[in-house]
Length: 395
Image (cartoon, rainbow, N blue to C red; front, side, top):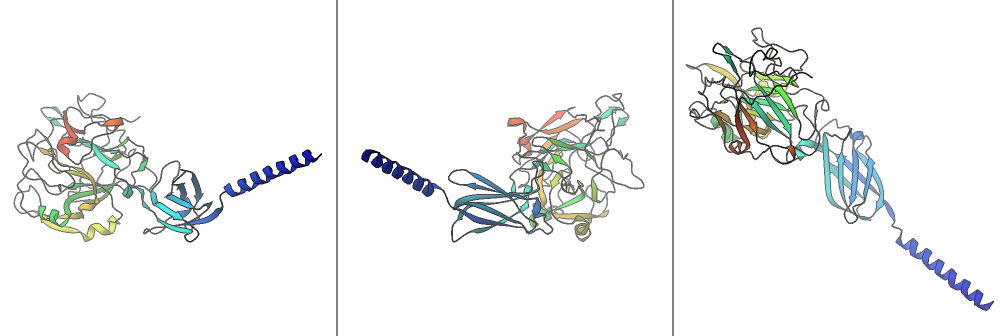
């Protein structure tokens, strides 16, 4: 009996010790408050999900923010990485992060600034296929409106193309530098003749990683059912550049959405068949309807005889997210894009300012995992492919 009592006492002691040890190992949870903020107005914080990652264990916690941008967690004290995104079906437009936040009894709240997602990424969109040279069907037939270009998502996540803009350089590299337009480069500005924007509310035109959008000058079947050899079919383009004007020479395909025309000095899309007026891909938060009228400057028209004057648009070079200094061999007199945007140039064998219609196609070189080369060095990144232009027919 005595042995039995001693055994029970010992057993109770073990159980009691185990219970105390279990209590000691249970981590105490405390309330952590994350406040989202932004320099932008009218941010819908209720769309944001906030994720915590504990630095030591990698354990993750998620919470939805409320309309005021507050997300509350019940987590152990420790060090956390904080990420906030407005993801919908795996794609977002805004992003913010805070690294190595120490959550302690003395520090139970933090603030995370959210901004446009694409401004936080090292790579987003680039110009890819460039067909400005156009085709010649026969001795008497040039296809003047066959130009198209593509932009490719070179990031590792789906991105919306809504609000991206395109500009055509107002200075021509196929003529001597008069020092007027090029002087703006010293002020971190650039002179452009045209500006166009992809329309959308912000979540309309999703481009998956490695995929592209096609922008056509005129989204029609230039091959006329294949009867014009070498011509392209662009009826399946994602957008077309139609500039409404009483004397417009192009056809507006009602089935293909138009880019928004922010400004066109020519009242038309004019890229330059020899590539002497490089194309730029832009991103800005500016209200372009307000910006454009305030930044027009009258200058001599590039390449024109006499002293014809027109209004050119001045934009900051910080808007440029990608560009390619295209041009033609033997008729390349000066760079018109800043070196920070493109160190060199990709040149075709053409006749200069009044060239074209040789079916010379410019495209980025392929890179790993289905992506394309992008080193801001066109001579290295692009290749000229005779008759390499592609058709994008309606599916």
